[in-house]
Length: 396
Image 1 (cartoon, rainbow, N blue to C red):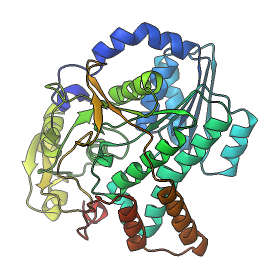
Image 2: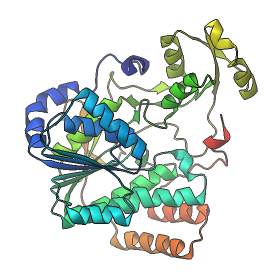
Image 3: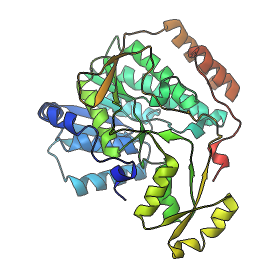
């Protein structure tokens, strides 16, 4: 893996100064606490797990649906950090299952519960069935694990949101915005904090992670040339989550401050840097067919076929924002972390209406995408869903 910081055009780690300033307090709290990480084998989950593990927690349990990723997480931790005196275990469980409920019933005693599980792809809204699962994972599993945490006396519940929840234009961002409404309701019974952050560079399933796959499989590199995004490294995503979990006050949303260290960059620009880092000169193609054909011969010549085009697919946000102009900010507490301060504002009737509507669809085992989109519009009046009729699965 090439140096991620260089690829995203940065010299230093974003949160280095904040971590250094709070390290003693952070380590003291982690080493005397018990943690449950849900979705701990995903890219952000693995990063958070490592940040907790290396500070010697009393108990660290990891739950994830992906058995294979969990195996790699354990190998990675053993190879990097070794062992701890505390109770470290992993469980290959689906949070929505009865097995998970039995697991929580058998123990369930954690000081901190961190929920990193999510359906995160914009492409997941292309069909009504995956879209319903997105509602289940991002909203209802969150509400369920929150309730279990309340019943078990958990001190703090942390959950990842997304920058796409600020003025959402896609169903993924909107599902996280609705999730935040459910969080506000439960915040009257348990302390909650969350985080919105940029794209995690080279995270599982991301376009940049796909670059690695394309090189290994000797396939063209494809990227949009008109979409700019903020990027954080996997380690930075773990640090941001842990800082919010430990130091966030009730209802706080942490986000990376924008600075010279964090700036917008296009996927195409990263692709060029990535290829040059590997010793290849990018060769710009005119079509998918040309790119596929040239991938058979061009790498031997020190060149790599690329297809850089404008984005025209559903749900792509033109710009990124971590907060809206209606949210109250604390920009002074941390050096490179901003905090959105929230009151417990939610509409009880609206949340119950949402549950009832989704339940009736599931009970009927029949629903359309339009029905869910319309329901999301009812929940979020300013939701500007961007439907083009084209999806990423229809492209290379």
